[in-house]
Image (cartoon, rainbow over all chains, first blue to last red; front, side, top):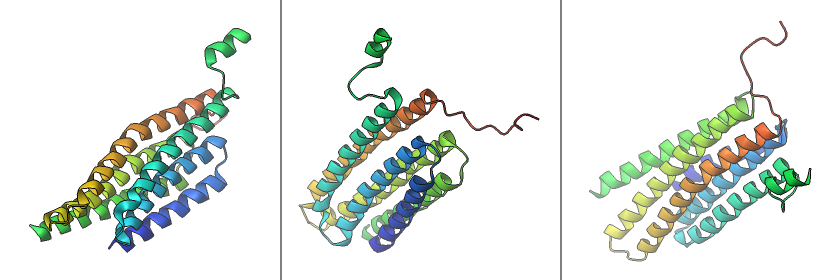
Length: 94
Length: 114
């Protein structure tokens, strides 16, 4: 039964990839990649149960952390055009 | 007891898969960023939550069979769930805010320029 779960997660991952390739704006692409990362976490967990090695969940935890940080960093870059400056400093410079 | 837990776990995994597939279908079909965010958020909360609940019920089944190393697996599943619970709304909010700041107009049902 876990093989059904794995197959379903893979199908929806490929659908999210299609949106990441099509996405007209950059925000569509970032959102699709974020969803793809969440599904990767679930895929790793399901694969761990499928192969009777649930210790894979450590990898899932690390991947969830990296995925969140990456999404926020990319969004901050596209919102402010810079990773280091806060909005207040930018306004003061204008 | 065992059978009930097993059935409950498979039902919640199937429900999680359903929500996940519907959410990604919405990701493909809906018209703009903000409506797609709705589908994406549903995938994160319901889909991931139900799938992790199903896996947690499987580990509870393992614990009931006397397999003590499943305790650590259960703790990790709860940690993954708590983390997704905290980060998914933050990411969705940041996406909507970045979209507004980047000048993406929300899609409306009105005829443009008629």
